[in-house]
Length: 162
Ligand SMILES: NC(=O)c1ccc[n+]([C@@H]2O[C@H](COP(=O)([O-])OP(=O)(O)OC[C@H]3O[C@@H](n4cnc5c(N)ncnc54)[C@H](OP(=O)(O)O)[C@@H]3O)[C@@H](O)[C@H]2O)c1
Image (cartoon, helix red, strand yellow):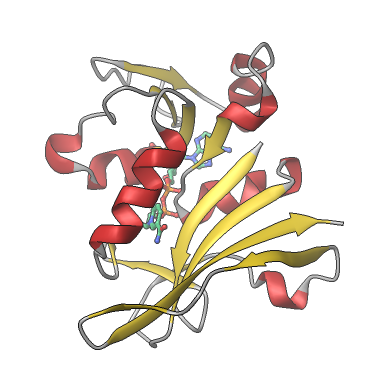
């Protein structure tokens, strides 16, 4: 299982249930990684999408405590364990944890790869990804060339669990 996330220099990921910035090449990368795969997310992340609708061409699994929560085109589960059970028959490489902070925090331990888009900026933020650089079990396996979007610099990193 993999995580995919865009973080700033402080590993911040969001503010007021929105992402910090939208970089077209990063959105393309996210789409190319996850299309035709399984994505697992928390209810807040689903509700941050346009019209609160699931992502197209992906199996969307949404985690909430709310028993009667229903969204067309999404599989609703009520615990991390239920989400893990739902994906047990899929190839683990085809399952992506896509956020947000609460879900990353609980599911990172089940992942062996994290795709990090690292944006060289410090935003105001209220949600964070765990800092993998402080976790000795994670190391950077691939580091892209520096990318630019207007005056923003960022890179695509692939962290792998040792
Ligand atoms: N930069 C990125 O790559 C990226 C990616 C994704 C999201 N984000 C950002 O992250 C922020 C959202 O993160 P978040 O932490 O607020 O929300 P979240 O992780 O998307 O969703 C949290 C919700 O999931 C449910 N949940 C969490 N753990 C659960 C469990 N063990 N059992 C049952 N339900 C559980 C709860 O829903 P109920 O309250 O309904 O029970 C909880 O309120 C937004 O700003 C978003 O834009 C950034």
